[in-house]
Amino acid sequence: MITLTDFLLVGAGLFSIGIYMLVSKSNLIQILIGVELMLNAAILNLVALGRYDRYNNGGQMFALFAIVLAAATTAVALAIILNVYKRYRTIDPGKIDGLKD
Amino acid sequence: MTLVQALFYLMTFVALGSAVFVAATKNLVRSIFMFFITLMAIAGLYVLALADFVAITQIVIYVGGILVLILFAFMLSGRENLNYISAIENKFISIRKLPALLLAALFLIGLINVVVKMDTGNLEWVKVSLDQKNNILPNTAMTENIGVNLMTHYLLPFEAMSILLMVALIGAAHLSRKEAAG
Image (tube, rainbow over all chains, first blue to last red):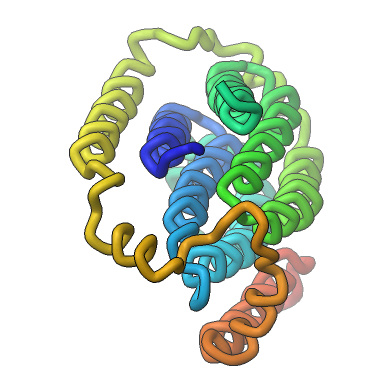
């Protein structure tokens, strides 16, 4: 049987890779992928801990909620990225340095 | 080593390896398609954590929805950023990436420290759950339980989620419409 610690360690690894992408990438889409990796690490932890809650089933339920919320945030974030591209013709966050006027 | 353990290590290797590839490659398209593999492997890990319904949801929503959305955004945001990306020097370990690497390594060390010190075998609530036979076994069917709980115990979060999804839908449509006068 696989212990809880194994799942939590995998989650820690995924989270660290996500945070590396979040800080080092110079492209908004890749930063978004990093955020998705971190979300997946969190959901993996929820699912692994939810194994000990069979009747109320809190872990799996909130994992489902988190997946749906991730979908919603991604849709809004991609709409924002497309708008940023339309205005600046680039999606490098280091070069987006002007206000509207 | 049982079959379950072998599968767990295989899935872990695929998930972490492809995640590292996603982070390290300089080709954006390749990294997006490699992210497919990562998500599939994580869905496999969910199955091994006895959450098959969550795994199917992950495949349907993440792989079918979010990733296609990311691909669309990538295609619509032009080819300049492709040229730009291949133009810059992008080694995995360069002096520009060092702070990010340091931060990620520190996070990894801290998290591993917490997990190992947690000693999950002896946690109080895990023992209580095992005593009351409240843990999920490999032969329990959870989907029916999830459905009943969703309509009784978790009805309020469910409805709040539906309102938030509608808000996000309208917001995304509003943000991405053509620029109108005013």
